[in-house]
Image (cartoon, rainbow, N blue to C red; front, side, top):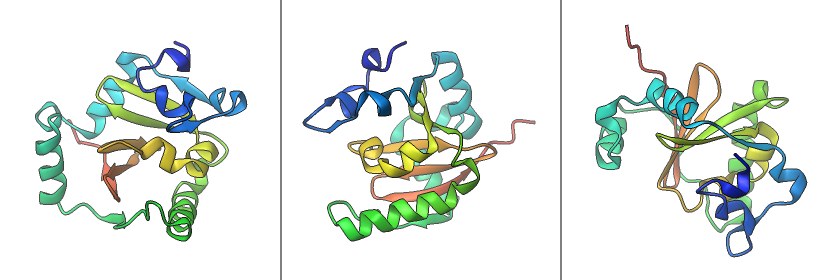
Length: 153
């Protein structure tokens, strides 16, 4: 599927949100529904899909925070979040990460592009799973948590 056909493409192709260049859009691949679901379920079981339960479970497990304030609208704070993401995702910087918007919708994105334009990926989401191997980051409103995969054994 072409990024322009993705249900969340307006985030990257609408000038009211963010207008990515063709070169930037070429660094984004739409993942199949099956792949997106597999990634989502590796972190979240079915009972967590409704947002309220998902967030309550995160709070109940006292997930470790990467940052408690991404700094929306404050250039200095947004740059600090960018630097924090770059250092956290450093080993993936030459590759890609997966960004899950919901259980069936995800993108494979250049890690550099994601870090550089993190706020464009996150806004206006309530939450995103940013999968980078054995662990992930969970963006929830203005917070970023560390998230572990579910042991399904």
